[in-house]
Length: 90
Image (cartoon, rainbow, N blue to C red):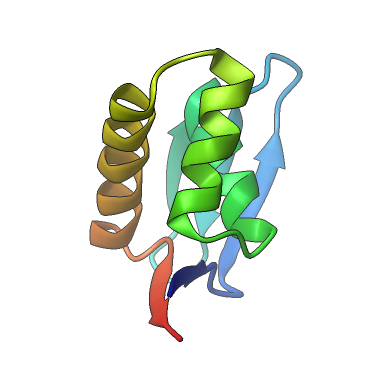
């Protein structure tokens, strides 16, 4: 089972419009998350697996599994490539 962890050096600030700003204290870079990205990030914070995050996105946005899976995969890969999240196999 794959889960993801957010390093302690990542600071998250949620904005009023269901978006968020992330600050990586290791390199002092800012990143923004749109509404979908924030929903996925919250799933990671809640220690949800990729499949559970996909289920959450499907229910919140009333989209099919293929679209939800694609969106989640794209955002997870981007967060991993920026070292904003870490992948853990259990």
